[in-house]
Image (cartoon, rainbow, N blue to C red; front, side, top):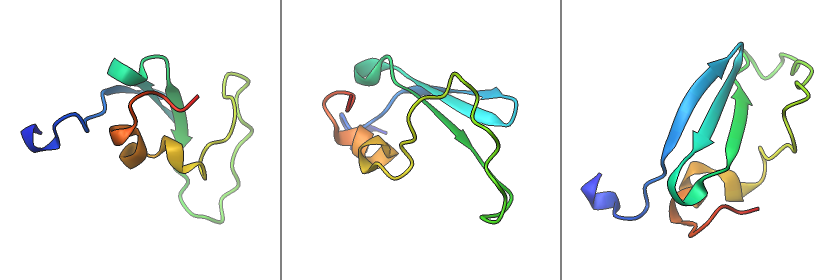
Length: 75
């Protein structure tokens, strides 16, 4: 981790049923990301709970790699 320098992200992962929730800390404090792993790309995504906001799967700004170099949360 020392080799990563400031490119480390801090988060706590929680499970909520079939969903995984990442609560970010440090410079990304306040960011929460929810994800669900499907068995296959053919599986249908279940209805999103009301507490899940905007879909960011295809938004590269929210990838771990992008977050690791971002000075602040991209919202």
